[in-house]
Image (cartoon, rainbow, N blue to C red; front, side, top):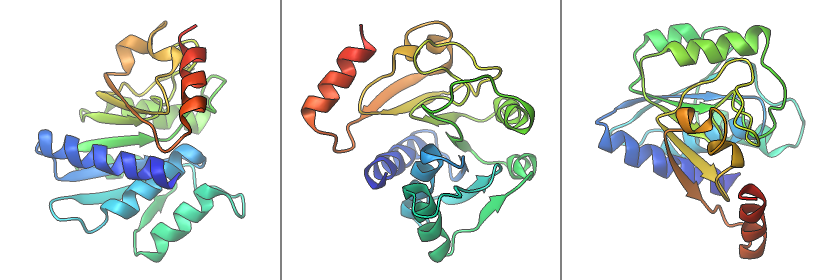
Length: 199
């Protein structure tokens, strides 16, 4: 997670500079995807030229010693305010120049409903470029199907290898420009993962 967060932070730096963006809103989910976003927030916090806001509209991870819980604890200890609850629309009205979509990742395997779907739809309606973390929220990473609603990404930073769903179904229309970060995974494992994704 530290490696993924570091790769994400570097992508935010580069894309923010390229797009002349100063204010970045990281929307973190309660799982590992959100943990990646929180690690990136910690690395970008108080960095010259960037203003980082963090929202966790579904709350933070509740597993006592999970990496995502540790990421939240470390971010809070640094003084980062994590906005929890139903205030995502308010944060979007504050005018970020970029959204980092770290809400849902590979673990999403059923159609979004209720609050989760509303949050994805709210992000999708924002007229702001989006960097998706690993997978755009709402995309089935295997099939490319939309799971009820989706946050269209301008860029997707995928970890280890591109996902099969990027090239199938609705994937090509919603992933934007795809980059891959190796995040320190062993070469053999990464090669096997790539082979599975391209079969």
